[in-house]
Amino acid sequence: MEYEEVKALRERWGGKPCDHPDFTDEYLFGSKTGDFVCTQCGESFTKRQRDQMNRKGANPKLVQFTEQNKMLKERIDILAARRDRLDALANAADGHSDLDATLLEQLCLIKFLDELIQSTD
Image (cartoon, rainbow, N blue to C red; front, side):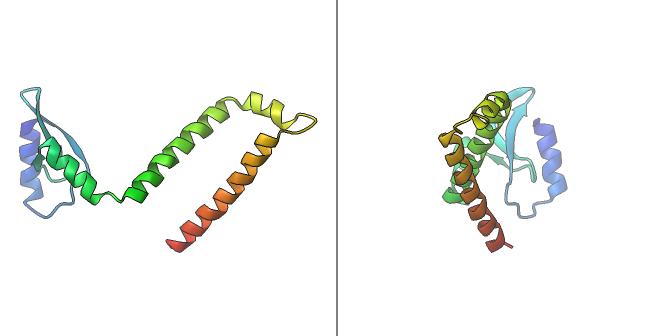
């Protein structure tokens, strides 16, 4: 975000409290300054300050859960792309024990996730 945009954003925000939900690079005359700007209020932070705020506000278990969720989505996308190969395994006369075990694990995971969703309602 260019410095003039940052300045205008700060003026619009008016000094209210901010939880700084997201950051972007700060630019001056088209070059990065090395600092980061809160996209909500326009306050500038050094890289160290931004990293410290990210660590303070982040719950390690929630971060791990989110990262693992991304990994699962990636794996599912890969398997979806290989659907034709999975069809052959699923339709084999003797079945496929790895696929059966994975399906069972997925059912257990779905059950646990449903319980987690219900506990947060």
